[in-house]
Image 1 (tube, rainbow, N blue to C red):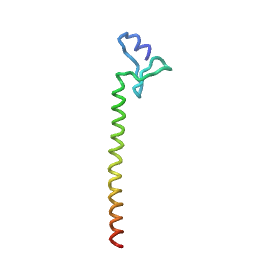
Image 2: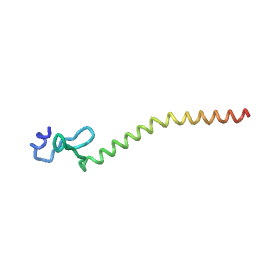
Image 3: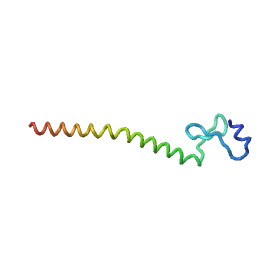
Image 4: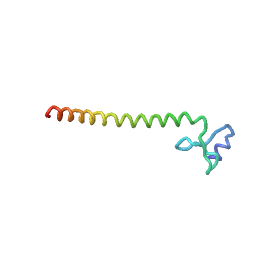
Length: 75
């Protein structure tokens, strides 16, 4: 694929799954045009984690608060 991209002679490049650009089989680098896409993927990953954790943590915290209030009312 690297040879095919070079044969176009128009600046085409081979990009891997993690937006790394290949100079040859053993050498890869992060191209400046792909930096923004990489940042967006990382931001989306963090957002997905937040969206998954918040619905779990909030009910747990509410349950703990309710339990503490129940214990305090008994004593």
